[in-house]
Length: 219
Image (cartoon, rainbow, N blue to C red; front, side, top):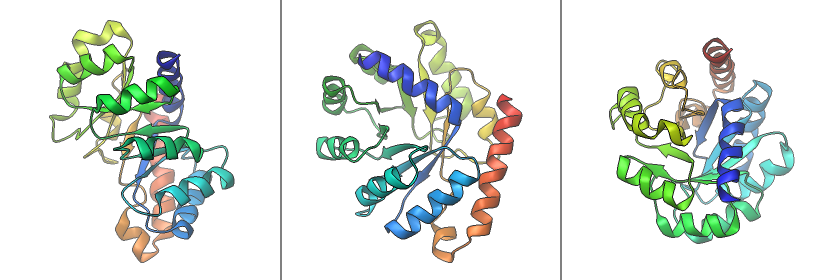
């Protein structure tokens, strides 16, 4: 069942293509940002557990935007794993591979995507049932060339990746052109500085540009 959940998540994320990685300090700002992203065509978002507001944002966003494929990010412990799905998250992501969390996700059939940086981590996670991996920090690890080399010996296994960390509007097309990459995680949509300054028009412009880019790359 967990493997199937992984493959379903990969399929859904492939349709969204871009997943904004959001660090939100309060619910009001978070909901306003998500409303802009949603109407601009961005149909997925990762609310990171880097702030105290994250649980409330997930809870309220699930009610306000039921059509969004809403995820929880930076899930580093079992409490946050359970809380995220209890609040309605459709998927959860971590920067690293923690077997304890993966095993709990398997037991509960949660759509959890751990982070990997090496072939060894890919193999260990795959053995537990993981088919959808976060590749982090993507650019620092060697970028597209690195992910292609990691994928090569496992291509026949039907695995999927979501690179994050250094992915930008400029290099996203190169990442998205790799067949095994379901989506990219981007911090360029909803940047902290833009949120703080209330640059809502810029955020909307960037979101629409991202969707135009995605359409060109994937059709």
